[in-house]
Image (cartoon, rainbow, N blue to C red; front, side, top):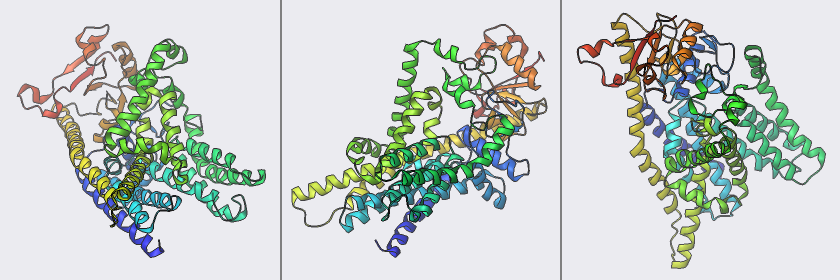
Length: 541
């Protein structure tokens, strides 16, 4: 297509994507899930002059164990840095933070348009079908459930999706440059790839799989050893230059330039192990569960990644796209994205089987959703073209495939997004009510040290208190935690399988937790969002 047509097409996709994301952002009024609140809280602290600081201690596996504490012992800073830009200009609200994610999410739709256009070139499609396939992919991504939802949540999901797509678009371009891909003419492209990889490394740890896929492509590419070295060395040097300052910071603050907590996450045998205090994950504890449980963990992780993350949220397109992948992966433009997606899927399922059920693959899967969307469009386009030839149609109907995908994606989004918006509003009201009830009781959160709770990040984001993660351990362990940090209050919202029932059971040292009756209970005016919430005073300090 001409440059003018390309700009107009990309502009249309971007505009529709922005409008859809602004509408959804207006419904999602609270950072849910908790890791989103973490990024927003750190961005707010940065804008307010407190630096990269977190107000909640959600894991005890990485020293120094202080609260507030330096942020990002395992996660990475780019999402917070991006959110801080509009917050610095418009105020430190969640709505301000959403602006960066809205724009990046709209860019993802444009990158999906570009990916489909590359596919059309590889397949040598007629101009009309090529144009329709590309715009259809962009518009479908603009309204699809997962891309739209996570564009309203300023966390790592959309930035990593954008960087993954950018890298996967750049890789085949570099390898098919007119001159030898290892010569000087490829240097600007290689520098650009290095910048993308460096920014991805500041977004999610899965950036390592992007680099690994690039290395595999280089090894498979015919050419001189000197060209191969250039193809690897230039992006690696640029990416390392971008990431090195952060690695040095982590080394100085946490004693490790890499996310050392990743090993603890790999050794988890239950979801609440991430909050462990007295009984942290160890190799011996991990192996003691036995081969059957280790296999079961991985089977559960595969099903979670496949069904809960990819197929169900992306239905119906995800099912079509997955079925078409064995054929679609033969298309050169799709190969890098397929291999990155497959590698991320398998490593999260087999190496981090418990952590992935708590969101590891979910937040790294943005580009994989685009893979399935484009794959489904290709399959439908080919099917409609074949039916047209069989039936002898004389008028072009290439528009039918993107019409089906975009309308199906939009319908699915319209059905499910209001539920998420309602849940985010309910969570906001829950913590507002908790803050109000505690203040009415003369026990404002944070006045008696940090608060131990099963939602430490939400609590610290929504109140003036510092939050400490509640371990799924006996009362003696929680008392030890309270003494270590001077915490005088325990708040249990949903529970973690152990709390609050262990207090009611009369377990040893359960009497160290004296329940506080919320003010609204006595007069029957307790907010609906606080039904089930229980608050205790720690009396054994």
